[in-house]
Image (cartoon, rainbow, N blue to C red; front, side):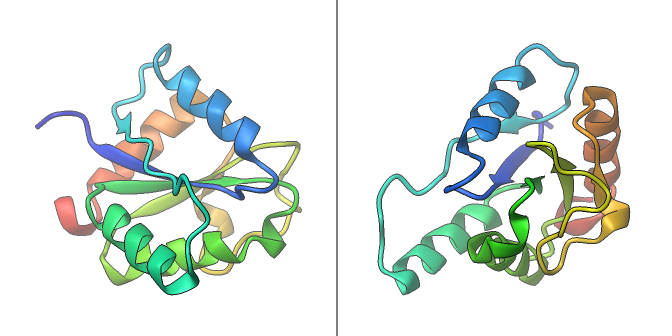
Length: 136
C-alpha cells in the first residue's frame, strides 16, 4: 500500500502558520504518511463546508489534529473530529503554538491521544492509527 493519506485538522484563524510548517517538515522526516492539501480555499455556507470536509476526511486513512493554545474556540475542528469518528477514521493530536498538556483540547480528542511535535512520536502514532479504524 502507498503511504497512508492524512487529513490535517487545525484552527484556520490561529494556526495556519503551524499547519504550513508541519506539512513542510513532513518531507524531511521518516513519517509514513502523505498529506493532501484539502483545506477549504474559500468561505462556504456552513452546510456546504460540512459536506465538503466530511467527504474529504472520508477519503483519508487518518486525521492529525494540530492543537494550538486557542483550540477550545475552534468549533470547526470539533466538527472535523465528529466527521472522522462517524467514518471510523482514526485520529490523534499534536501540540503546536506553545500548547501543552494543560491546554484545552477540542471536543472528542483524548489527552492520551495528543502528543508533542516530535517526528518519531508522530510516525509511531501514524503506525498505531493504521492498526485501528477503517483501514486495518
